[in-house]
Image 1 (cartoon, rainbow, N blue to C red):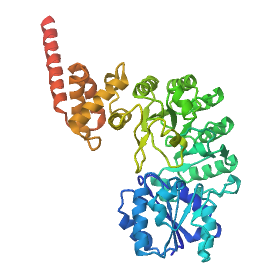
Image 2: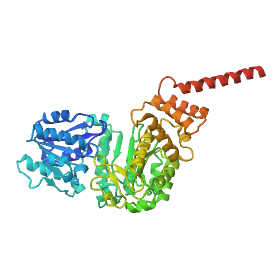
Image 3: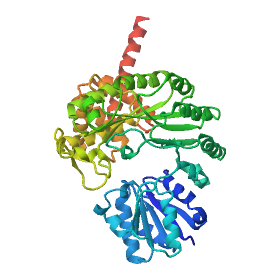
Image 4: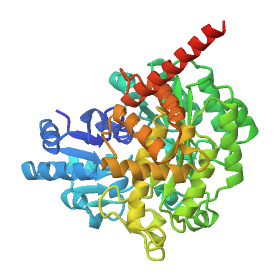
Length: 500
């Protein structure tokens, strides 16, 4: 039996708990006394508690995040009822700030704020030796990256075969965007690049082909960015896939030259535009050259095979729906492969809260702490925008409607898709669990009745999308369209015979 268990609830099985592996790797002599056990948020808290307690560990450490805090709170409540002597330690961004407001913090024995790589080790050493720390709250301790043991050996063969492998070449962020917890960082710190690439080579040799970099600013230090990209270019094969988060307005020519060498399906960039409104950018301490951002997005789209995942945020202070719509249309015109319409969240500890009173910002009191309304977007409109985001994912970001996309969006993407979104919800009262077959039928109806598209034009584009979707059979409206098309072709054939 292990003395220490590290655990969390991932959003999906395919995800892996990167932070837990750092904690285990840096336990020193206690590393072999520790076991990592991962669950998903879809499992029952009572079953999770049963499995964890079956190991009879002295210490159970939970990684707590915005997506799992409710389920972990229920799990810890059960554990403390059944086995009050089990020591529960919680850490992670969700419990690093405002602990007095949270039930999970009341239930737990100890709380570690911020990066716990060394704090957790020191706490475990005390607890294993039956020493009681003076305080329940363990404050953040600065982490020197040069002293940190990298955790990549703790990805096992099952992780390599079935899970996303997270890696980081740096920690921290020099920017101060107030919606993000990284605004609290002073700067970004790089890991020793030689050591990091040595670890990447070992992962590659073990069969890892999907590397997801969690660096907040991958292209901050261009020399390091180029060296990392060159490392992977030397190992390029058909399965290799890399994900990076880029600063949108910082893409010098020598970095462009390397990016352009990557083949299709090997590179994805997450590019946070967030807002094109200069007053809002200033309010939230975001420095962004919008013209340079546009230029770089255009270049990536036109001159490379990289997949672009871009982000805009709804509900930022000072940005009304007219401003958001203008920014949205501006981004659509740049034609990224995906636009993630994110609803502003009040992450615990993030500086965005300083604007709450002036802009009448109302947030959901429970996870995910999404904005409910402000002084320029009321609750009802915010709900419509939430549905807009969901339907946008379902229809446009899914890539299932490539032939119909331009017909749907036409010359005013935001206005037209908002109309489509409002109609879909009025008819279905759903934003989830709409079957693909039904979605085709619904799109045909809204496009021909509400968006005034010609029947033949939209039927032809939807038929092309349907045939690419993998669905069997033919929807009723496409059956009619195919019958009409066959009749027209037959008539044309008869006319041609008479002419001959």
